[in-house]
Length: 390
Ligand SMILES: *Cc1c(COP(=O)(O)O)cnc(C)c1O
Image (cartoon, rainbow, N blue to C red; front, side):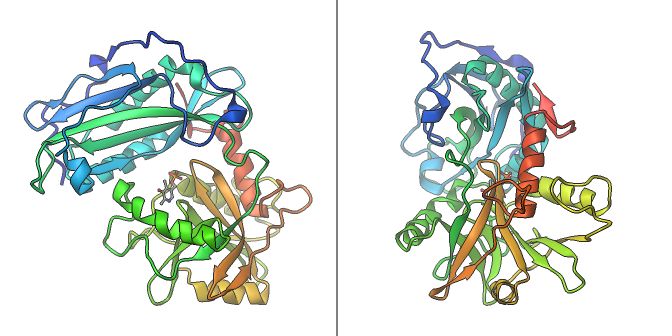
């Protein structure tokens, strides 16, 4: 349930106060993910009595919050993750920002925050990245990570709707996620903890979903694995790879290939923008509309694309039979990450990472093909309505 907007979010009311200090932009080779921030931020306050207030672009800096603010006690918070990319002509591009807005509004409704017009927020984000243009790195694989956030700022310890909300957007220049080339990762299958549960909020980008994942992540790291493979229930259904969507690839009996991913029906997985894009590209390939690079055309090798339940026992069996072709994760930060093994019940399930001779190194065949196409679209090297020029 949304709280009423009262006054709508209106990008035309924007005021801009420029920073007086010209902080130098660090070379992209020194950037660590999410640790450097651009000079400006966007803030838009909302209150139940007056609705959406004046959007402001102003120097990046600390927020003033009452210590009783609802975000600090009851985790009334949600966020988004998207990127701005520079193309060869120097233009700035966003990748499917409409989907980020849709997901953010869904989260806002679940959190009993107000609704807003996503197109207005995109206009404001475009203004912000224009003001901070010099912060968008131009080296290959680099981009400006954009973090829209909503927090409940009502000063009260009563658990209830936050009658005051702050929507703000900060930006962080990011290098290629894996600086020394893509490397496949190892996963430890979660046995003691779950990330999300049916009818929970695992399908929303709520801060409250992420904090509790840190301890299991540290445990996995102590055992020598890089990420947690989050599974759910008696059947150990696959849900997420760390903070990425999960894509196993199987060889079927008739020789065709199945690209599978957990369905979104039960709310255990996040509806990723990258996930949606991969499914869409794979379906276009499967129907012969396009042929993905380094893959045989669908007329030669059928590609089946499925959103369904995938269990750990299926993964183990497929690995033993040799029909598990690859496993990869997808998300805005790294785009695609291949998996090379999964720690499970004290042993390791080996996952092939064979991109073939022409493939992208460090990726399985489908993973590498998707990485290539998504990158081309994001950087404006392949024509697509998914890439929005600012
Ligand atoms: C953000 C996120 C993803 C990926 O979503 P994208 O829109 O592709 O970036 C996947 N899983 C979790 C848990 C996430 O938070």
